[in-house]
Image (cartoon, rainbow, N blue to C red; front, side, top):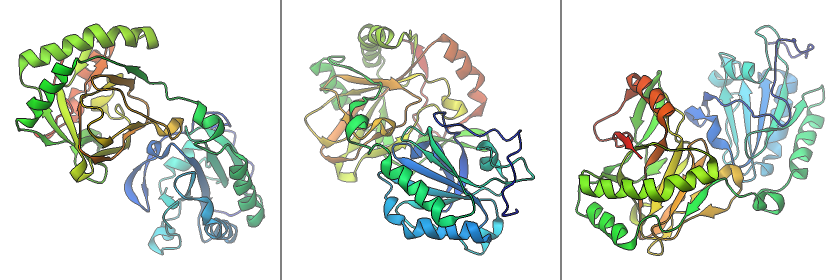
Length: 381
């Protein structure tokens, strides 16, 4: 790729300031399949430098590395985008954690998404994305590496600091509903779990066009027990139908007619139970999910375990015992580590008849090991 910056080809459509930045999955210095949507919750510098063999690109990368204090993975992080296989093979660029990583974009898929190339010309620039992965600023390279780095850092330093000021005043669009399950039902569900038979809980990933269940303790540590007791399952479903569905309709103008999955889940403090930032509907096998429901059964009996929505600041959410947190499956969210005790929850998904059609159409893409409990049937909510 030439280091010169030709005028952008008109077919090269880049996301503009204020628009959502495209999501993608790509190989990265820290992960063979990095899901870019999970980086939300901090400012992101996405630097399309093309190749480190170019003098200007090398100087830009060195400039950012020299200023790496700005990239702590809390307020901001940096991703370089290389399209040159020799950058990887020759180890010309390397990550520096926390904060600095690089994508290997040898097929140009990411560069095309951001309007950097039409396949013939490459236009280098750094995109600055906000905590919701919207374009905050675009800084072209120009011909002065030092000026480019300084402009990016100045833009970051002048942006609203996350966790303070305006960001702290923006609540996540979640619904907290107290008194969904009565204390006796909460205790019955906890006892049901403690009778034994729980299994390690996995998560879903898209692999080769299929939705595959996976386990990774670094990403998720939780145990689930499927509620096989039909009477107990019916009681839970009745509470969701009469106490949650009307509130969801009132708050979100969505009528949930179906429910997926009846499990009691346990995040255990002894093993650091947690679930890192993820979305619940990003694979073909989960695309039908509309709202997630988290009914916490024993609030006050454990420490940690709050829900966190990184796109909306650093505040966390936890309902009273028997209460529910309800939120769109499209929101990035995490279950913070439990540091003491056990956090028991009932965790169904809600959807409607239109989504049921999508679910039926996508069944052929679902490859689920026998010990995975992500999809355990649906019933009328």
